[in-house]
Amino acid sequence: MSDGTRAAVDRLCVFFESISPQSVSRMGEFYTANARFKDPFNEVHGVPAIQRVFAHMFVSLHAPRFVVTGRIVDGTQCFLVWEFRFRFKRFDTTTEQVVRGGSHLLMTEDGLIQDHRDYWDAAEELYEKLPVVGSLMRWLKQRANS
Image (tube, rainbow, N blue to C red; front, side, top):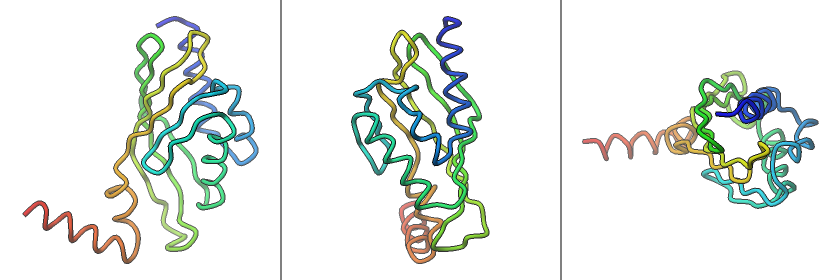
């Protein structure tokens, strides 16, 4: 891993761990103009579309934040292990929720993200935590495991 790649990943981790509604506008500093972003709910291309995904996160949730817990860098590929911490706005607003996941990043030689794919289990990490849907998801999981 080059020092340039290491520095780019370090800057990226600091950015995501301190992301705010105001800093979403800085995503062009970290992504190529036509970058792709995919997670369990979205697949978008281009910095403006990626900014909308992250801006929506601040509209939908209380105090969303990322904590990067691990990273692997190999050439221009990077895998970040993270915790996404937040509180629901519509349900129990006092309990902090934690979604554990990872991001596979394909980067350019100059350290910009050209492809960002998030991996996390929406059923276990999100749906099971919702009031009515959670009961159904836990029941289905129990039935599938028996």
